[in-house]
Image 1 (cartoon, rainbow, N blue to C red):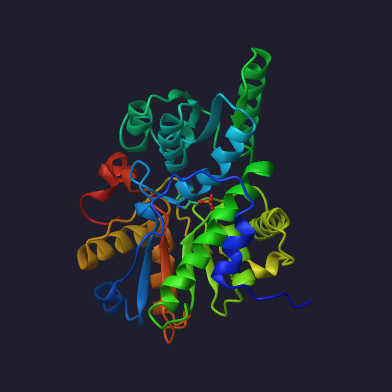
Image 2 (cartoon, rainbow, N blue to C red):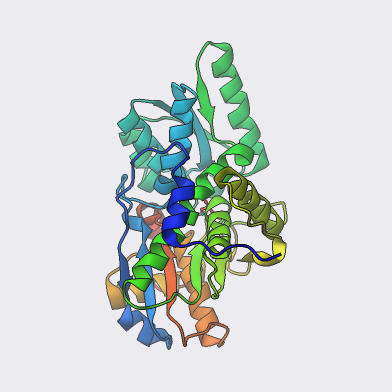
Length: 344
Ligand SMILES: Cc1ncc(COP(=O)(O)O)c(C=O)c1O
């Protein structure tokens, strides 16, 4: 079944019915990176600066939180219960948004992904006044259950928690990346260009939103989603399912299956939260050719994939490629030991 192709304005009109807060600096810049492109043998290459969304060093989660925290306020929440890895970019941006909105922020952070030195994102969580508890449960279903249990305790004590919830939260968060893709299309068209392939680090909502955005905007190029973590489920099926729930929220007729989601688990390296040599090389190269910093856990691995695709002629370098920088840069301070000295 063929579905209508929407303009960026039509996408925005569909999104307008969702509760939303203004948290991010939007639109984020779209910059061409010619020195980097030349050094990897690509054609025209652009970087979407979602590391510049503005909330405490920026990142993709500030776009998500415009919708998630609007939903929290709609539900009269007085405390936000969030959790992820100890160097979570999500939790750092959420702690900042909570401070701005006057909401208590409780974070449950897993030490399984990194040591818990108070550095990088974790230092920022403390500076934002979040209540932090470090736990030894890995990121994934176990930590999700803990968050639900903590929210239930708060509810029993008469509080109104809004809790990070993979089932209900991700379709809402993904709306923001349908919008981001519309923003990119508009910015490219204002330069007289159509985007070819799009690359982004994605683990769930961001990827689902981009995949749905591709269908809704009728883009021809691939949306390549690079996983930073190996989940205990089929990520293509999962992202398609999230995308379909997002389409329902927006009243869009588009429906995706796993084959519409181009997600790769080939660049995770030794595991979530580790630095890969491909990623480290990508970080060094972008920094030294364009003065732009990637983060070691997400965006460096995604850029490593882009470089790999270009060098193996898997990417169509005849049309402009857009890399979405989803943020994460405060983590570099916590990864000092892995980021100085020769690439291992
Ligand atoms: C820098 C960065 N990029 C990408 C992602 C992936 O986002 P999502 O899980 O919404 O797909 C994250 C999530 O934590 C992130 O921090």
